[in-house]
Image (cartoon, rainbow, N blue to C red):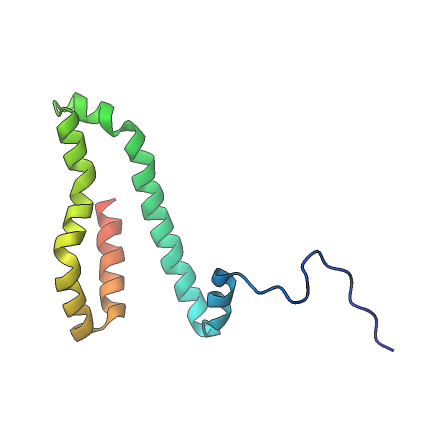
Length: 111
């Protein structure tokens, strides 16, 4: 005889979260690469988030005012707006994987 399944707090008809569903749909050989890229992106975003609280004091020490701090914070977003379309064309021509590798490596050098 088979043993009954232990009771669970999750109903049997519950759907997995979209994140869990996306992970499950990813082929197993690609999961390590996805985890690496995700960890690298998280580390880069953490680094940016760590500097933002001290940036105003640092900028004032360099002689920048409030406008200078705003420009420093807005520069990455402005660059993204300018470069998204050209980078998309390059990615279509060269493939996304090489650009992802070069982009992460460049960001790591910038940190």
